[in-house]
Length: 225
Image (tube, rainbow, N blue to C red; front, side):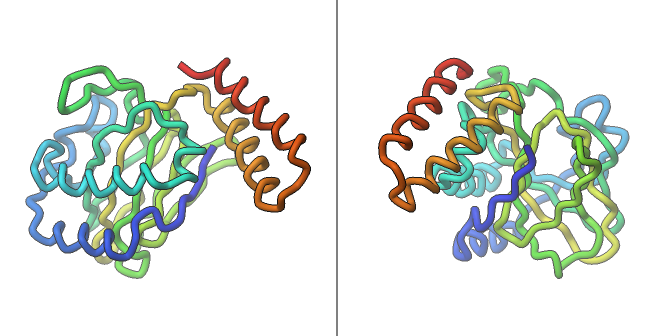
Protein backbone atom coordinates (compact mmCIF):
# COMPACT_ATOMS: atom_id res chain seq x y z
CA UNK A 1 0.00 0.00 0.00
CA UNK A 2 1.30 3.43 -0.98
CA UNK A 3 -0.31 6.30 0.92
CA UNK A 4 0.22 10.07 0.99
CA UNK A 5 -0.40 11.70 4.38
CA UNK A 6 -1.10 15.45 4.17
CA UNK A 7 0.14 18.01 6.70
CA UNK A 8 1.99 15.65 9.01
CA UNK A 9 3.93 18.70 10.20
CA UNK A 10 2.20 21.97 10.99
CA UNK A 11 3.48 25.20 9.47
CA UNK A 12 5.16 26.04 12.78
CA UNK A 13 6.83 22.62 13.06
CA UNK A 14 7.98 22.79 9.46
CA UNK A 15 9.52 26.23 10.02
CA UNK A 16 11.32 25.00 13.14
CA UNK A 17 12.83 22.13 11.17
CA UNK A 18 13.83 24.24 8.20
CA UNK A 19 15.34 26.98 10.37
CA UNK A 20 17.35 24.40 12.33
CA UNK A 21 18.61 22.71 9.17
CA UNK A 22 20.19 25.96 8.00
CA UNK A 23 22.88 25.39 10.65
CA UNK A 24 23.24 21.68 9.91
CA UNK A 25 26.55 19.96 9.22
CA UNK A 26 25.92 17.50 6.40
CA UNK A 27 27.98 14.36 5.77
CA UNK A 28 28.20 11.90 2.87
CA UNK A 29 24.98 9.85 2.81
CA UNK A 30 26.88 6.66 1.99
CA UNK A 31 27.86 6.47 5.65
CA UNK A 32 24.57 4.70 6.42
CA UNK A 33 24.05 2.87 3.11
CA UNK A 34 24.00 -0.90 2.92
CA UNK A 35 26.18 -2.85 0.49
CA UNK A 36 23.75 -2.69 -2.42
CA UNK A 37 22.86 0.97 -1.86
CA UNK A 38 26.31 2.49 -1.38
CA UNK A 39 27.24 2.38 -5.07
CA UNK A 40 24.11 4.28 -6.19
CA UNK A 41 23.65 6.70 -3.29
CA UNK A 42 24.71 10.31 -3.85
CA UNK A 43 23.31 12.62 -1.21
CA UNK A 44 24.05 14.24 2.13
CA UNK A 45 22.72 13.42 5.59
CA UNK A 46 22.79 14.60 9.16
CA UNK A 47 24.76 12.32 11.46
CA UNK A 48 21.87 10.27 12.79
CA UNK A 49 23.04 10.37 16.42
CA UNK A 50 23.80 14.11 16.40
CA UNK A 51 21.94 16.43 18.81
CA UNK A 52 20.29 18.23 15.88
CA UNK A 53 19.03 15.00 14.30
CA UNK A 54 17.62 13.87 17.63
CA UNK A 55 15.98 17.26 18.25
CA UNK A 56 14.29 17.33 14.85
CA UNK A 57 13.47 13.63 15.06
CA UNK A 58 11.58 14.34 18.26
CA UNK A 59 9.44 16.89 16.44
CA UNK A 60 8.62 14.33 13.73
CA UNK A 61 7.86 11.55 16.21
CA UNK A 62 5.62 13.82 18.25
CA UNK A 63 3.65 14.74 15.13
CA UNK A 64 3.27 11.08 14.15
CA UNK A 65 1.95 10.14 17.59
CA UNK A 66 -0.93 12.57 17.04
CA UNK A 67 -1.64 11.58 13.42
CA UNK A 68 -4.58 9.19 13.32
CA UNK A 69 -4.12 8.43 9.61
CA UNK A 70 -0.54 7.31 10.23
CA UNK A 71 -1.57 5.13 13.18
CA UNK A 72 -4.36 3.52 11.17
CA UNK A 73 -2.21 2.83 8.10
CA UNK A 74 1.07 1.81 9.73
CA UNK A 75 -0.13 0.17 12.97
CA UNK A 76 3.30 1.03 14.36
CA UNK A 77 5.07 -1.14 16.88
CA UNK A 78 8.29 0.91 16.71
CA UNK A 79 9.43 3.88 14.61
CA UNK A 80 13.09 4.14 13.69
CA UNK A 81 14.58 7.51 14.78
CA UNK A 82 13.95 9.89 11.86
CA UNK A 83 16.95 10.73 9.69
CA UNK A 84 17.43 13.77 7.46
CA UNK A 85 18.93 14.13 4.00
CA UNK A 86 19.62 16.70 1.30
CA UNK A 87 20.02 16.38 -2.46
CA UNK A 88 21.48 19.18 -4.59
CA UNK A 89 23.75 19.67 -7.60
CA UNK A 90 22.79 16.52 -9.60
CA UNK A 91 22.70 14.26 -6.50
CA UNK A 92 20.48 11.19 -6.77
CA UNK A 93 19.84 7.77 -5.26
CA UNK A 94 19.65 4.96 -7.80
CA UNK A 95 17.28 2.01 -7.70
CA UNK A 96 17.56 0.10 -4.43
CA UNK A 97 15.59 -1.69 -1.74
CA UNK A 98 15.86 -0.79 1.93
CA UNK A 99 17.57 -3.23 4.28
CA UNK A 100 15.10 -5.67 5.83
CA UNK A 101 16.68 -5.32 9.27
CA UNK A 102 18.58 -2.38 10.75
CA UNK A 103 20.33 -1.92 14.06
CA UNK A 104 18.72 0.75 16.20
CA UNK A 105 21.27 3.59 16.49
CA UNK A 106 20.58 4.20 20.18
CA UNK A 107 20.34 0.74 21.73
CA UNK A 108 21.66 -1.61 19.02
CA UNK A 109 18.49 -3.72 18.95
CA UNK A 110 17.42 -5.33 15.68
CA UNK A 111 14.66 -3.40 13.91
CA UNK A 112 12.52 -4.94 11.14
CA UNK A 113 11.68 -2.45 8.40
CA UNK A 114 8.12 -3.14 7.25
CA UNK A 115 7.34 0.37 5.98
CA UNK A 116 9.43 3.20 4.59
CA UNK A 117 8.48 6.85 5.03
CA UNK A 118 9.65 10.06 3.38
CA UNK A 119 8.56 13.34 4.96
CA UNK A 120 9.12 16.23 2.56
CA UNK A 121 10.62 19.38 4.10
CA UNK A 122 11.17 21.41 0.91
CA UNK A 123 8.34 22.66 -1.30
CA UNK A 124 8.19 21.26 -4.86
CA UNK A 125 8.82 24.73 -6.31
CA UNK A 126 12.17 24.94 -4.48
CA UNK A 127 13.81 22.27 -6.63
CA UNK A 128 13.60 20.45 -9.95
CA UNK A 129 14.11 16.71 -10.17
CA UNK A 130 14.30 14.81 -6.91
CA UNK A 131 11.14 12.79 -7.50
CA UNK A 132 10.77 9.64 -5.41
CA UNK A 133 9.96 6.79 -7.82
CA UNK A 134 8.42 3.71 -6.21
CA UNK A 135 7.79 0.47 -8.10
CA UNK A 136 4.63 -1.43 -7.24
CA UNK A 137 2.16 -3.79 -8.92
CA UNK A 138 0.72 -0.91 -10.95
CA UNK A 139 4.07 0.24 -12.32
CA UNK A 140 6.29 3.09 -11.21
CA UNK A 141 4.64 5.69 -8.97
CA UNK A 142 6.14 9.20 -8.92
CA UNK A 143 5.98 11.09 -5.62
CA UNK A 144 6.83 14.76 -5.00
CA UNK A 145 4.70 16.16 -2.19
CA UNK A 146 4.24 19.58 -0.56
CA UNK A 147 6.47 20.44 2.38
CA UNK A 148 5.08 18.87 5.54
CA UNK A 149 3.42 15.96 3.69
CA UNK A 150 4.65 12.37 3.96
CA UNK A 151 4.48 9.24 1.83
CA UNK A 152 4.26 5.79 3.37
CA UNK A 153 5.08 2.67 1.33
CA UNK A 154 6.26 -0.95 1.76
CA UNK A 155 9.98 -1.11 2.55
CA UNK A 156 10.18 -4.11 0.21
CA UNK A 157 9.56 -1.82 -2.80
CA UNK A 158 12.28 -0.95 -5.27
CA UNK A 159 12.61 2.83 -5.28
CA UNK A 160 14.93 5.66 -6.28
CA UNK A 161 15.34 9.45 -6.17
CA UNK A 162 15.88 11.14 -9.53
CA UNK A 163 18.78 13.60 -10.03
CA UNK A 164 18.40 17.17 -8.80
CA UNK A 165 18.71 19.74 -11.58
CA UNK A 166 17.89 22.90 -9.56
CA UNK A 167 17.74 23.85 -5.91
CA UNK A 168 17.83 21.43 -2.98
CA UNK A 169 15.52 18.63 -1.88
CA UNK A 170 15.41 18.29 1.91
CA UNK A 171 13.50 15.50 3.63
CA UNK A 172 13.25 13.25 6.64
CA UNK A 173 13.20 9.51 6.11
CA UNK A 174 12.72 6.56 8.43
CA UNK A 175 11.19 3.13 8.81
CA UNK A 176 8.35 1.58 10.76
CA UNK A 177 8.21 -1.84 12.33
CA UNK A 178 4.49 -2.57 12.22
CA UNK A 179 2.44 -4.74 14.55
CA UNK A 180 1.24 -6.40 11.31
CA UNK A 181 4.21 -7.25 9.10
CA UNK A 182 2.24 -8.34 5.99
CA UNK A 183 1.40 -5.43 3.67
CA UNK A 184 -1.82 -7.01 2.33
CA UNK A 185 -3.11 -7.60 5.85
CA UNK A 186 -2.27 -4.04 6.87
CA UNK A 187 -4.06 -2.70 3.79
CA UNK A 188 -7.17 -4.75 4.61
CA UNK A 189 -7.20 -3.47 8.18
CA UNK A 190 -6.72 0.10 6.98
CA UNK A 191 -9.65 -0.16 4.57
CA UNK A 192 -11.83 -1.67 7.27
CA UNK A 193 -10.87 1.01 9.82
CA UNK A 194 -11.52 3.76 7.27
CA UNK A 195 -14.99 2.35 6.52
CA UNK A 196 -15.83 2.14 10.23
CA UNK A 197 -14.79 5.76 10.75
CA UNK A 198 -16.93 6.92 7.82
CA UNK A 199 -19.94 5.07 9.18
CA UNK A 200 -19.35 6.62 12.59
CA UNK A 201 -19.17 10.10 11.07
CA UNK A 202 -22.61 9.64 9.50
CA UNK A 203 -24.10 8.00 12.60
CA UNK A 204 -25.09 4.96 10.55
CA UNK A 205 -26.42 1.67 11.92
CA UNK A 206 -24.79 1.37 15.36
CA UNK A 207 -25.12 -2.42 15.50
CA UNK A 208 -23.49 -2.81 12.08
CA UNK A 209 -20.63 -0.55 13.17
CA UNK A 210 -20.17 -2.63 16.31
CA UNK A 211 -20.01 -5.83 14.25
CA UNK A 212 -17.43 -4.34 11.88
CA UNK A 213 -15.39 -3.05 14.82
CA UNK A 214 -15.47 -6.52 16.31
CA UNK A 215 -14.20 -7.97 13.02
CA UNK A 216 -11.43 -5.37 12.88
CA UNK A 217 -10.10 -6.13 16.34
CA UNK A 218 -10.36 -9.89 15.87
CA UNK A 219 -8.34 -9.64 12.66
CA UNK A 220 -5.80 -7.40 14.39
CA UNK A 221 -5.62 -9.88 17.26
CA UNK A 222 -4.99 -12.68 14.76
CA UNK A 223 -2.33 -10.87 12.71
CA UNK A 224 -0.55 -8.69 15.27
CA UNK A 225 2.80 -9.60 16.77
